[in-house]
Length: 281
Image (cartoon, rainbow, N blue to C red; front, side):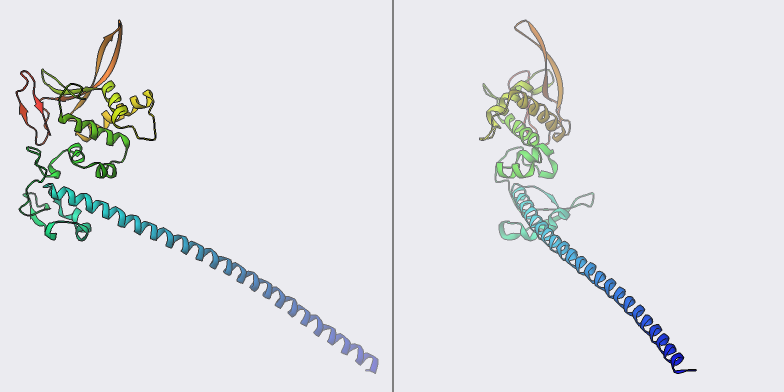
């Protein structure tokens, strides 16, 4: 082999080596780019996860605060009911027992005939002197339980405005004087109230300081409150439609009726005035 041929062979070998090295370089650059992209994606994922963790931590903190607030409000309501002579189920009081503000921090625990465990204040008389309405809250209708609450507790316990108004309507049964909301009935009807009177009652007693309810909206609230009162009273009251005639025109109006024989816990039946039955509770 001549020197020229040897040189050409050497050049060919070097070219193959260069090409092989270039291929390796290209592959390493590709791998490096892929690694950079993967690292970029990983860093972006880490950022997303850190953001998610921060949001979840904030949400957990908010939920904990809300749970603490709710439990605190529940404990306050339970303490008030216990002070009124209520019997509360033990399992409902257990989560809030440490937060109850009670005289001497003492509760009496007992079991009824059905095996249900209850708690109450030991040797506790009703501080509100409610007469016949001294039954434990657990024995009362939902509307009666709500009616026992003060304004702050009632606003917290009611979920809708209709519920709040329904309780106010029920509370208005306590008096029967000229201009009172409820009217004493006869022939099987203890008391009744018409939707139009409830509408006026809402405008006069349930309108917020920063609003002015229209007649139509007050009328809708009256209808909703009547329905909610019927539900909260476990259908001890009923709604009927009454036909009236005024100024030569006939119109139909809904009336909320409490029958004389309604089973209202803690009710008292009297014979005054004659021919009527007054039911309280």
